[in-house]
Length: 313
Ligand SMILES: C[S@@+](CC[C@H](N)C(=O)[O-])C[C@H]1O[C@@H](n2cnc3c(N)ncnc32)[C@H](O)[C@@H]1O
Image 1: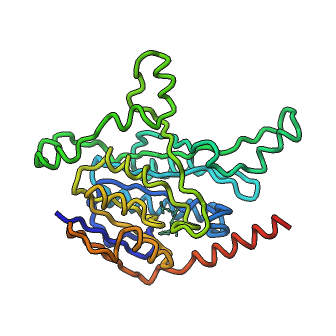
Image 2 (image 1 turned 90 degrees about the vertical axis):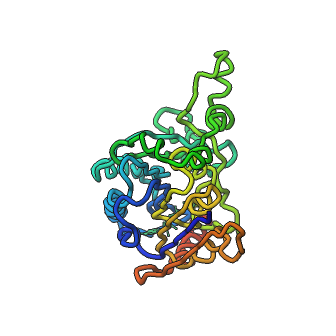
Image 3 (image 1 turned 45 degrees about the horizontal axis):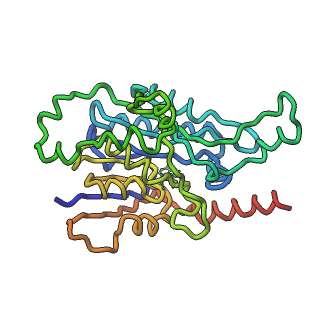
């Protein structure tokens, strides 16, 4: 059976297109506050950023089905030398909105794939106490749950859906995790489901489809969708960006919804979802443009370049 995918260009603080309790999983990464490389000066203040997250959390509480999961890929942000505690604040906001805090996975980026900050070099110049500023090698995948899941749900699923949704546990407990070596040293595989995932990030290369979007790797969405939804269920990304979550949902035979405020990302999402390709599987892709969407990416990239040239001179 074909899947359906709907991208709504508009502000995620209003998800009126979605019914109460209708979505089985949320996989998202909100704008990285005022990240110097992707969204400089996007928010006037950190309070404005938190206010957006609060409104979206309230909407998520309404649209997510009972017992189901919301995943946020987030990191604390360093802006103009000041560190903002995004991970802690989003955790608190989601809990205040009525979600249970279920887990935090640490996403570790491989050596050589991270931007080394000038901050960390300070210790080389001044090898004394108080000059330590670590380089950032990780992000958090925060996992929240709306109440408790009723596991009798599995008994009501058609056997072919259950079979198609079955998880290959080997994918999650050995390869790609930083604990493999430790487990081998211990002579047994003790870490069945480690809470650290080593996944290569999307490199900020010039000209790539996701340029200036701060996309997360498909592999993050792939793992979360496999771990928390059954085939044919609905996945939502309220901050769709380039559409990674929706693309992976389609590949894994789940339906998807995405909200994205920037109309300039429409061609990017269309390409990622294969909008112009005919499919034999009968998948449907729909775009809706609301009047609370806008145009941001070109302007944001201009500000990034201006800031880069000021720093370089
Ligand atoms: C970090 S990016 C998401 C990247 C995405 N995970 C991917 O893999 O491409 C955050 C996105 O949220 C969008 N955004 C910011 N504020 C929004 C809002 N109020 N409503 C909907 N989208 C918003 C930004 O335009 C940006 O594309």
